[in-house]
Amino acid sequence: MAFNLDDYEPVAVRHSRWLEQHPNGRTITHMVSQPGADICVIRAELWLEDVCIATGYAEEVRGAGNVNRTSHVENCETSAVGRALANAGMAGTDVNKRPSREEMMKVQNTAPKMRITQASSAMATANGIRVRGTQWGDLPEWLLIAAVEAGVSEVYDNRDQVAGTKRPWFKATTGGKDAKAFWPPKGTPDPVIATSEDDYGDDGLEEPF
Image (cartoon, rainbow, N blue to C red):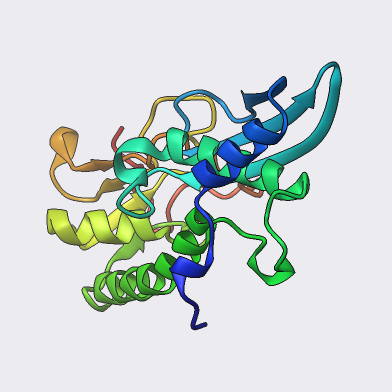
């Protein structure tokens, strides 16, 4: 998708125009997601007197892009305000330029990031990461990358036992009590696993917590 970022307004410009047109207007934001979560969701509201005239939602993921490495909450709030302003008719006269510049920057950065992600996953798979015993679904990309970086090629899959606990989702099969453990990124919800009456593992070996 080819486009020119200069054709899109920054949120700050839209917000300034809104305040000029509505000196008594108020912009209020609410964090919908849990504070500290890696995925941030924010709702923005535009108020005139006691009437909410427009809302906007945005979602940002910690670490997804340069800005989100340090400021994914702030970036999310800006995006939500931009959505609310667009919904209030502050996007200008060109209906094709309704998104803010910040939103289009996110679109611009998505394709390169996807290529990097796929390359990293392929690299990890090529290094032969495997599970001893029962595997509870597809292996997440964060595990594959972390295992390659740690030089681990075989793990136990503990996802059937970790809900509501502080146990690692995966653990290397070598190293005994000091075996390398792998936890998911902060904010990742507990895995949902289909129940099974089978013993853990197909070789009779229990995972060494």
